[in-house]
Length: 69
Image 1: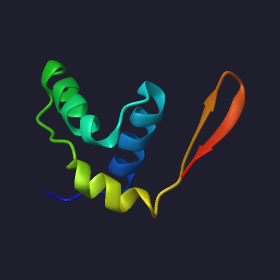
Image 2 (image 1 turned 180 degrees about the vertical axis):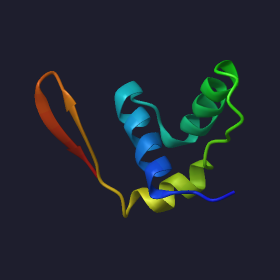
Image 3 (image 1 turned 90 degrees about the horizontal axis):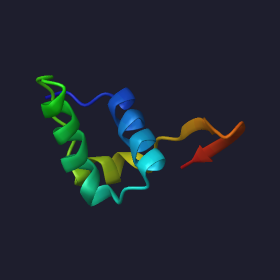
């Protein structure tokens, strides 16, 4: 399974939106994929944690640009 930087950014974006700890993120994403009937697997929490140090996520919340590192 190849993990792209986009998948890490997406996972971190979901984490920021739902305020999930990293160890809960993998299960949450896998549940969403299952409910959507999409044959994807989330990156592991360890992998997300290691890669999150090199990825910055930007998204807009309430009209304010927020940067999460």
